[in-house]
Image 1 (cartoon, rainbow, N blue to C red):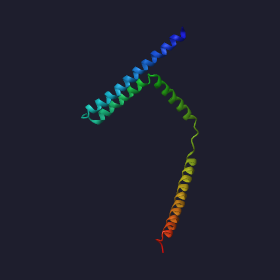
Image 2: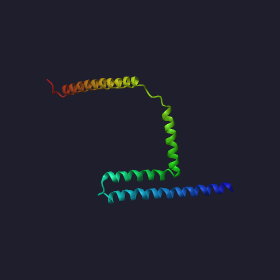
Image 3: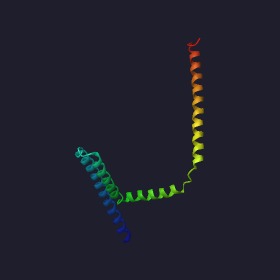
Image 4: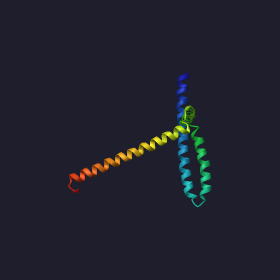
Length: 129
């Protein structure tokens, strides 16, 4: 009995989530239409209203199962980000200088190869005396 009720509950929750997503889609379209309709209103006011509207939409999204999963993922990602050992300023500078030097050396080598092949092709084609 308990299993059947649980399955029905999940199905109801899934249908309720579908209704929430439909409402979110309608609100997004309505927001875009209203933004276009009130295009004569100064952009700063429309931007402020849009930010509040976006926050409300995000809040509504967080009430869905996928929104809660996304929030849990964001929280765990923040936790992982805190575990990262970031390089020191000196390590960053040394790595950057090494990359710049390698790019310069690669550019010189490619320039030399290009000049050599240009010379060889022009010699084979008889364009050089």
